[in-house]
Length: 357
Ligand code: NAD
Image (cartoon, rainbow, N blue to C red):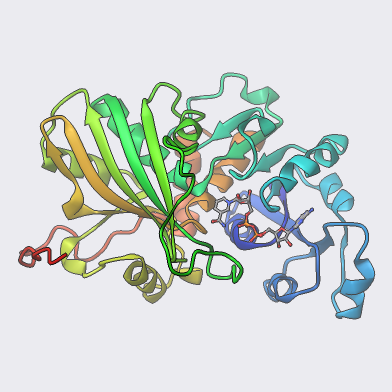
């Protein structure tokens, strides 16, 4: 059993905790909280031991009626791996504590690339030759995860000459009441190319990719408009088949009526996904088209969820000798990753909708 602690129980941490608890080869020892709020209640209701993330507030937990199992240091002393899910930049501050306790750590994409021994995506990262000596990994951001999963099979099969991606990013997560914009679409960063392309290169160093990013007043998912110039000129059907064969890519069938993030999240909740989570890239099947060597498609990425299976695989990468393929299969089976709509590949498509704007 791999004993795991989660430091930071917010948007990503609570999902990683649930995903770890669902793995038969892992034990979730506990999660940390900075304050005794509804997140602490959620952890307790799910049966997770609570640890105090910082040393200055144990009395606040006691006052709120929460029993604390110990400090972050206590947690670090009894786990094989800690998954840092603190806000962006705080992982860097937590790193000396993990190192002092000699606890291998996984960081998130909000940290700089050099925080860890390597950046990680289970499908796309190159094999790490010094795996036995690994002390840390950084699971790349939600956008980088979504792009890496897509570009890896394309590069392996056809060769990527150049990828150009426009990312329309959600303004904030649903629980982030202080984020925005609320009535605008904002270039962010306004400089082009954006930092997302270089982040993809921490996973796929040889893929030429330029990105431009905007922020939009939505909370559900990021949307990517993708153009990849391939080295070969496959037909559209072949590319659709290739992408359909990837367990963490979901090709949205045209006849499902899933026209945006709202419908996708609704669908996920309806089919029983906890929190309406979509761990897979969601690619509109009819958007996948090849013109000469140019591939075009639209995909949506659920920013709160797509990195979660990658964190589980990163834990195995650090603390076991399971291969990537074994780990991904195990993670996918335990969580139920791999959407397969009953409406995929059957029957006639609805008529083309005419653009009116
Ligand atoms: P969040 O703010 O939702 O959760 C962070 C949690 O950590 C909060 O509960 C906060 O109280 C707690 N915390 C604060 N200081 C802490 C400390 N010193 N030690 C331990 N915990 C502390 O943030 P998030 O969205 O879950 O992001 C976590 C990381 O994941 C960031 O690096 C972020 O960039 C990355 N990430 C976020 C998303 C997303 O869309 N939310 C997607 C992919 C990656």
